[in-house]
Length: 251
Ligand SMILES: Nc1ncnc2c1ncn2[C@@H]1O[C@H](COP(=O)(O)OP(=O)(O)OP(=O)(O)O)[C@@H](O)[C@H]1O
Ligand SMILES: [Mg+2]
Image 1: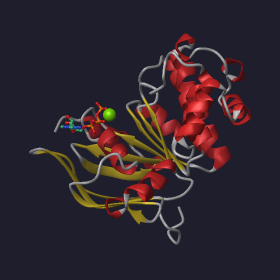
Image 2: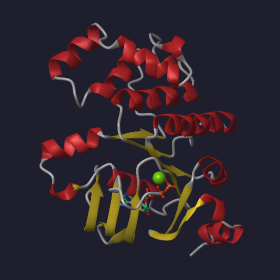
Image 3: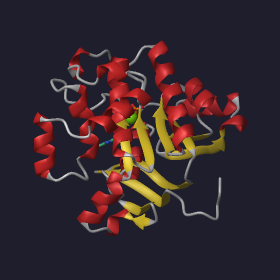
């Protein structure tokens, strides 16, 4: 970690309320370029809420979220969209359009940059086939470019979602439970792929995960959330069994 550089993400005393319910309480953290971070913790601990704060889909009730050196609550909509484009997010349910060919889902990675006209034309005559084909090759399924998306298996669809974020070419990739719809073998493959891509491209990777063993084997830094607070924020190699036990012990 290089503390002289600007963090990619920074939370300053962030609290998130949903009505009367406090989902996150007084979080402080910094994530730097090139780090690979797993957010771990029991269901309801606040992992997805934190991901939504990091990609700017949620603004904090209190405190400040800084992304790429900007306080996102203070950005005009156009600049917020620009920051948003720099952050790619992958979800558990893939968020793909089922009845379109893979190429169209991949080209959705350009949407923040393309004009409406170009996007509309591309739905009929796919543009940027080369970029899409390259991204699909990077995720290991180059032969699926013109297949209908809903004819792919779950693991393949998650690969398409990852390839779409490569087309978007963001500075950082967020992944919210990217493997919970997959079987153990596919889960490991997707974890391997995300790790390999973040190592090859140097992109910052922040992923929420239920599977603590995969978090340990695939990420350099672990942030343990418990009931909306940070229980630990530590390099993976210093995580102990006692810390894991405390993380999952009922409050
Ligand atoms: N939009 C919302 N409105 C009300 N409560 C919410 C909202 N989003 C999240 N919460 C609550 O905030 C808490 C944290 O939710 P969050 O989805 O962040 O947990 P999580 O750690 O991602 O859980 P899981 O592992 O089950 O995905 C939960 O108690 C949840 O019910
Ligand atoms: Mg969640």
